[in-house]
Amino acid sequence: MTAPAVSVIVPVFDGAAFLDRAFASLAKQTLANWEAIAVDDGSTDASAEILAKWAAAEPRIRALRHSENRGQSAARNTALAAARGEWIAYLDCDDEFYPDHLARVRDWRDRGDVLVFRYDQTDELAGGAAAGRVVRYDPALRYGAMFAETIAVPLGVAHRRRLLEKSGSFDESLGRDEDGDLWRRFARAGADFTFVPHASGLYHVRSGSVARTRSPAPPPGLPSALRTVEIRDGAERYPVRIPSGESGTVAQLFERGEYGGVPLARLNSPPVIWDAGANVGTFALYAKLRYGRNAIVHCFEPYPSTVELLRGNLAPFPDVRVHPFGLGRRDGTPDLLVHARWAVSNSLRDDLVPEPAGRVPVRIRDAGAVWDELGLGEVDILKLDTEGAEVDILEGLGPRLARVRVVLAEFHTEADRRRIDAGLPGHELFGMAFHAVGLGIVKYIRADLSEV
Image (cartoon, rainbow, N blue to C red; front, side, top):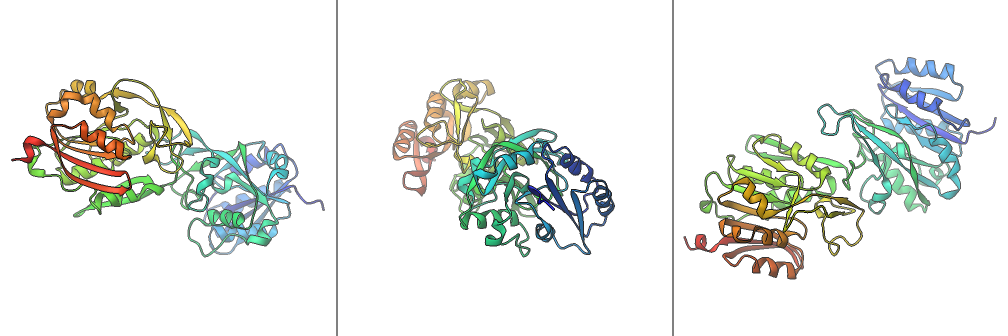
C-alpha cells in the first residue's frame, strides 16, 4: 500500500459539536494523498459515533479510541504511532484546515524539516472584546522567543515524521505547553524550521479550546500569549489580563512599589490622575486602590490591541475614562514601532526600538489642547510612561504644568532624564527608582507643596 504524503493527527475529546466541521475541511483538501488518524480520548458525548460515521464514509480516515481519558498528548501520541505519512500535520477537533493546506505542506516539503504556517484566529469567547472577529497570526514574528514560549499552536505546524525518532513524541507528563515543548526539542535536535507565508486554517478560540487552555498563540498585535494576574486588595480580587512576558510589570508596581512615596496628604480629594501610556491599565488600577476609589483617572493609550485589554481590565471601575490616543506636542498620526517581545516597550522612537516587529499608525493629540478640552483645573498626578515621548508631553503641556501637583515620569536615557528635569522648573525631585543604567523613574512634587 502506498504511504500517504501527509498524516493528519486529530485528538478528540467531547468534540461532537465540532467534528463534522473539522472533517469537512479535510474532505475539501486539494491534495488527495492524505490520511487522518483520529483518536477519541474517552469522550462522554457522541464523538465516537461521529468518528465511526466519518471513518465508514471516508477510507482515508481511521478512528481509534482510548477507553478512558488520558489527555491530548496521549491521544496525539497514539495517532502518531499509527501514522504512515512522511509528513505530519495537526488538526484539533474544534479547528479547520483551509482547502490548500495539505497541498502546501507537500509543495514546501523540501524546504525544511518543520514548516510553520500562519493561521487565522476567531474569538468565540462569550463577551470577548474581539468576539466574532477573524485575525491572522504570524508565528515568524515570535521565532526569537521559541525557547521562552509556544510560538504556534499545532494547527500551524507540519513536520517530518522521522523527527520523532530523534526527539521523541509529546510529553504526556506535562499539563500544558506540550506542543511548544516538542517544537523546542525539534530545534535542539537541529531541525530546520521554515516559516511559510500562507495560512493553514482557522483556529477557533473558545473557553474549552484544546490549544487555548495550553499556552495559546499570542493575540493579534501582542507579542506573547495572555495570562491573568490577580490583584488582591483586602477581600476584593481584580483579575488583570496581560501579555505573559510582561507580567513582571505588575510585581514592579504592586510589590516593589516603583511609584510609591507619593505624599497623599498633598493631593486633592478626589485626586485627578493623568495616566499617559496606560498600557493594559495596571497603573490606573493601582491609582484606584492606592490613591482613592473616588480618584478621577484619565487613561491615554494609542495602541489598539492594548486598548482592548485596558478597557477590559478596568471594567470594575466604569468611571475611569479611556482615551484611545497618545499625547505629544502636536496632533498627528506617526508610526508606532512595535517591539518584538514586549508591547509595553512599543515606541515612536527609532532609537528605542531599532528592529521593530512592525509599524502601526497611531493617533497622537496635542497634550495642552486635550487638557483644555477636558476643562481641568489641577491635575494631582501626571504619570508619564510613554517609551520616549515623556518630554514631548511636558512641552505640550507647557505652562499648565504649574497646575500639576506630582509628576511620575519614566526616562530611557540619561539625556532624557536631564530634559525631564529641565522641563519641570517649578517642581522638586523627591524620589528616583532605577530599572537599569540610564532607565528608571523620577518623581517630582510642585515646589510650593514640598514646603507645606
